[in-house]
Length: 287
Length: 318
Image 1 (cartoon, rainbow over the protein chains, first blue to last red):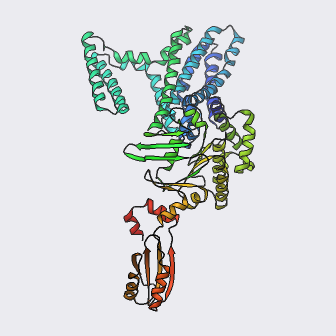
Image 2: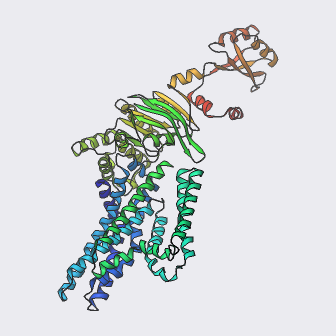
Image 3: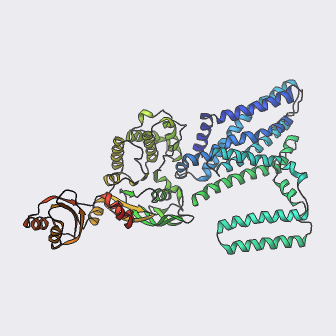
């Protein structure tokens, strides 16, 4: 794992990718720090951290697009997968390398609060909390990017799809008011979700009987659920989106309410996407 | 050492490898021969654990690649069809990286690398970026990568592709030398290559083994009935009549007239019969001079075409 991590880190700085990421990130954060905090005489550093999270959407795809896509395209995955390394070690090594570049970049921004401290007192604990949230959010997005990179061998496709996925996570909360919250919409939504699940099972098991059985069980489950509790499906789409929302869990860090729940959520999110990536690579070897 | 049993790989409806069975003994150099797309690379990818088989098993020293992948992969050095190189690294950086992922202990790493660099002759490009190197050097670095960690088994997929004739000879000799210490599976679609290097050949077509033996036995078995090509000065009907009366003739095929007043004939003899003397005696008695007599032994090339080409297609060619 360490060998992969070292090689990936080196590659980031042998190719322009690492410099583009760092340069662009520092440019944007410096810009917002200068105009938001310095020129305004505003000591609230965390609001700046909250504002610049939008750069993740543009920068994370750049950081992660190459990770696995390029290995597949260059066929260097043959070297890695036939070496005594486990897939988990390969994927973790790559993920940690991307996170390390991100950490390194964010570390540079530590000078901003130090500059602020020259002009007055700053809330150190609050800023540390803000940074923890900021790093967790970034690391979660990097996990999404890593996963997308395992789906294709084309870096551009990986970057565009990662961007779209991050954009979706971004605007998800804003969709609230436009989404229907009727019972019917909830039923349609859960039916679609279960249809997707049945399809996945069908592709995996390749057995019509199992597929039909799971389909029927799901349909029965939805119906029973409705009769047991008539309001079960009201506003289901909203609840679902709220559960998934990354930004909602990022807000407490910015406002200084550090609690364990969101930390666990981000860590599970990261673990889930790393797990998906490993499964994706294993699956490709079986097909 | 390597046991392959009922190996099958399907891609949807397409069967790339079909019920393959063979074993490779310790210290043997096995040649894997077949036209492009026959399933050679797929088989090698399965043996090395890059992809998995649909059914069947591969055992290395009795260990199954699926059950103990780490232990098995440690024993195998693999040069795939396209050498897996990172263009943005120098040769030194790349081979250091490979040493690390193959768990070569730092104490022996340098000695190991020195030996390999010497063997495959890449000392002069040691500090250059891989992407700037020629195809020949890239192929050698691919080979160097496979040798790292001194694995017992080497699997080389078309190791001489893209090399110039001098380099091809060098690499062949190198593989022969390596065969003294390693068990090697080598694939190629070029016959002279495998017949020069390998002790045993497996010819594979459409995912199936169509022949397997030593190069000598293969040509002996298939050339049991020998063919002669004749050019005789004389009338066609008379000459054919004389030849038809000889014993031991399996088939006579007139080939038409290539020189005025002569006839070209292809004669196939029965198994283990030498027809040359009877033909000479019979024709000289009737005073029909033999202008040319040439025996058509089956070369490996013929065997290869014979076992990999459909019958009707062969007839079209001839």
